[in-house]
Image 1: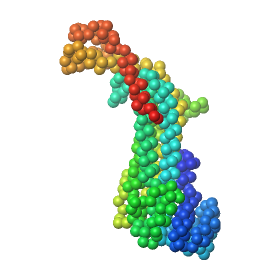
Image 2: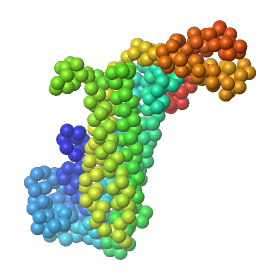
Image 3: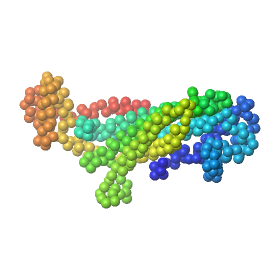
Image 4: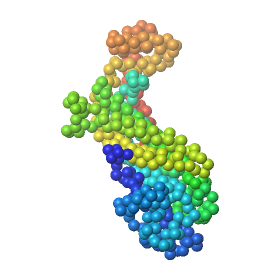
Length: 437
């Protein structure tokens, strides 16, 4: 991922220094387990830790890269460089193991590290949404379906819906982390022919993983597909809230907008512009994250016990998806936290159609008074269309309609235009969303 959309903590997970450190710990813990079983000398395991446990700085990484240019094999290059530090006892390293034991177990560690950051990101975003939802719990605005005025809601209820969705996303991240946190130290085709299962159990425990139930030469890729699918769903939730903010910032609506900092510029040619650039950016990043889901699904089907077709895919999609989503969640938390909200504009937009948002309530009242639903719908719609064409206020037209007047008195019609009717269950919705949160 390019630096523009990278945050240091997530990017560091995918740096060579972290990868090689995890590889070293896998090999060193495996040596400890092998020594405990009497397969290798305890002095050999001790030597690996004593002589090999050094930072993977630029010099060590450059040496590994140089060896790989000759061997064309990354794990062999790593083991060769390690042997240069450990010495003669390095011959006991990697006993009974295959490269994928190292690569897949390391990948599991990296993905769990990434998941931990994403879960923390989600927590910060949820906290920001909850704060703003409670702030605007009763800030009434028009709800829209198909982009057209429907019935009133509140801005707090809007945000509560996004909170509930992102809370589900957080749970999906937790589940994805649990599913991906598996270790495979089982040898060339997963049969443990040359290595005791106790080694796998020991390494897994040391790294905070669970032993893979059945590995072939690799950890089954359905686990990874589920992980990236979860990231894709989170990205879609990010995009949905971002899209809502973008719509509300449109000049014709202007009910909310991104914070516009002093000195910020919106256009190189038009000094008046205040564009929703952050949320537009988030919609783009969401597409990028979702684009990693299909390759992850296609990685599930490999030849026999394994092939390498998944490897190049994962080297690209894992850093890109996790770094982009980390950036997106953090950016969206900032957008929500500083979002500018305009209750007066919400009220003006609500009243723009002269009370048409009460059409359902009038319809129901007429049916309660004895008018058939078909006749009631026709009568209400007849007056509503006059309002659409600018020919009067809805309540006044209803009062003047003789057919409607035969069922509802003027005072009864006026009572149907009470805004509190639409907000009476806001507390119930908030209790559902935030109870126990």
